[in-house]
Structure formats: structure tokens, C-alpha cells
Length: 235
Image 1 (cartoon, one colour):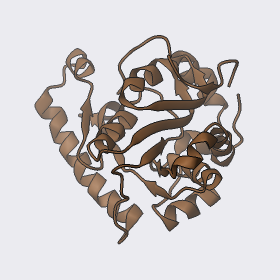
Image 2 (tube, one colour):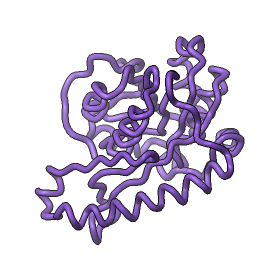
Image 3 (cartoon, rainbow, N blue to C red):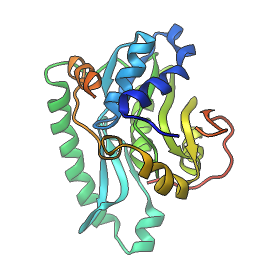
Image 4 (cartoon, one colour):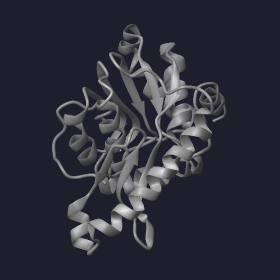
């Protein structure tokens, strides 16, 4: 499986989501990389597009090592098992989480500007990212959205680790993935084959800004992820 860029990934993903067009869904992209993908989904479905801001909570002194995530709306997910195994205390990690929560607020202003947050209650929400590896940031986003009482939440990604998608399945109403893969497969063969812009992420914004960013920017199991086998936590 190869995606030429995020636009191609978004179009392939959108083809698997057409049944939701009749539900007048709201499409939310996770900055940065999810916005160009979400743009293609929103365009295909004729749906409004916005962002949902999430920040990874990195390990103290090792910011690239994700121990969880904090999302717009205040939802926090921490992998306490990993924290214990690596010797990080709750107090240490919460200090990082509080800083990231402040950064979430800054980025909401940057992406959305003066535009209000989208209305979530009673709506079908399609949450889009450019991929799921361990799933911590997506999990925090889902939990924040749940507090706003949407009609349903659909998680949609071009690529994802089967184990992580399976662990997320109970928290959403549907999971749609173009190319599910085993975690090691995802981290090696699949991700290395993706173009650099898919791996690194790109800038984007909400509302009209998100649309502008989107405009710029499976194997035999290809398709909807339902009844996935295997489990595992995500960070």
C-alpha cells in the first residue's frame, strides 16, 4: 500500500465513508497531519470541516516518548502502566500534562481564531488523523468529544496498527481504516514507504484555514475495521 501524499490518502479514505454523507456529519481533523486528510473526506461528503486540538504528553526529559495526551475540552489520557515501568511519577507527568494543556489553548486560538468551537451535540462526528500507531492522542480526542454528547463518533484513518485500532474500537461507534497493519509492520515497512509529508505532518487551521490546508496539502484486509482481533493499550 502506498499513498502519494495526504491528498491521495484522504481520497482513498473518503471512498470508505460515503455511507455517512446522508447523516450530515461533522468532519474533525487532528492537527497537523490529519487536516489535509480530513479536508478530502469533508469535500467528498459535502460536510463541514474543523479541527480538534490534541497534544502529546511526553516523558519528562524525553519529550518524544509519549506517555499520553491531552485534548481540547480537557480530556487527559495517561498510560500509567508505561509510566510505572519507566519509573515516572504521576506528579512529574502531570506537570508536563498541565503545560501541554496550556499549549492546547494556544493552538486552539491559532487554528480557529475568532471562530467558535463546532457544535458537537447530537451530530455524527468523523474524527480523522493521518495514522494511528499507539493511539494515545486519538484516545484523548475521543474522550473529550464524548463529553459533548455527539450522536456517534467515527474514527477514520488511512493507516493504523491493528492492536491500537482494536483497543480504540470500544470507545467509538465505528472505525474505518484503509490500510490496517500489525504494529511492527506499521512502524517499519508501512511508515517507511509513506512520503515524507505523511510522516512529518503539515500545518493547517480550522474552518476556512483547515480547508486551505487540505487543498494544499490496504492489503487484503483493506476497508472497515470491525471486530478486530488482538488488543493492547495505546499511548
